[in-house]
Each structure stands twice: as C-alpha cells, then as structure tokens.
Length: 182
Image: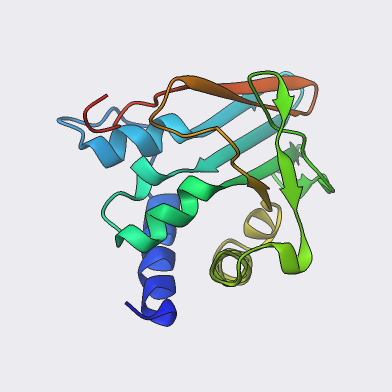
C-alpha cells in the first residue's frame, strides 16, 4: 500500500476517533474501541479550572489499519498531550509543552525529533496538527505531539508506560484492553 494511502487512512481514523464522544459507556465495545478508550486519559480539574489530556497512539487502537501502519506504532511510541486552563468565560488557553519524559519500567524512552522521526509518522502528525488546529481552533492547536523509540515497550506485552505532565503522572499498564489473544 502506498504511503499516501496509508497516511490518508490513518488520518481519517484518527480524526474520527478524536471526535467520538467520550462521555458515554460503549455497549458491546470492539477491541479497537476498548484500546482507544484506555489509551486516552482526560484529567478534568474543576477546582483548578484545568484540563489535562494525554493520548498514546498504539497498535491495538488502530488494528483496522493496514499492517504497515500498526508496525510503525509498534516501533515508536506516539503521545499527544495538552494542558488547558479554562477562564471564567469558558475560554481555553494551553501550556506550551516543549518535551515529555515517558518511562517504561522506570527507564526513559528515547525521544525522536526532526529527521529521526520516520517520514510517515512526521506526515501524519503534521496533518493532525493542521487539521485539528483548523477544526477545533485553539483546542486543536493546544495538543502537542511527541515521538519516542518504543524500545522493549509493546502495547500487547506485559509492561507499563508513564508520562508526567502538569504535576501528575499518568500511566498505562500493558497489555492494554483490546489486545487480541492476550
């Protein structure tokens, strides 16, 4: 499958999943839906008028994509993060998040930047940033994306992933829900 078509399929699925309401409990969820639900962490902090969102893009969440797409998500950990402050007038402002230090088994994952990011992932993230920025305005622009070498971390093997952001550590235990055969 050509990279352009793979990119288009991945982008369409990602944008569709971002727009999916997260305020209801799914009935008869598919493995993909279970994985996607588990992969997104939303920390609503009404007392502080803040919202923190962390999203790990992982293979089980996108298992309906071609194998070449899920293989990329096996090799690399892609994380989206946002820290919003909500004014009395319900306007959102976002912190700049220059870096993240995710850990697996207590060890920091190796960050990838610039030319070290595979072209397909860089293209998907550039399109996501532009599309979400246009579709959601400041909210879409407030989501920052980071890419790391997965090392020994795999969503469907025993392990963990932890991301510290906004004075909290957000974590996932693996295998995540929705992994087939696990």
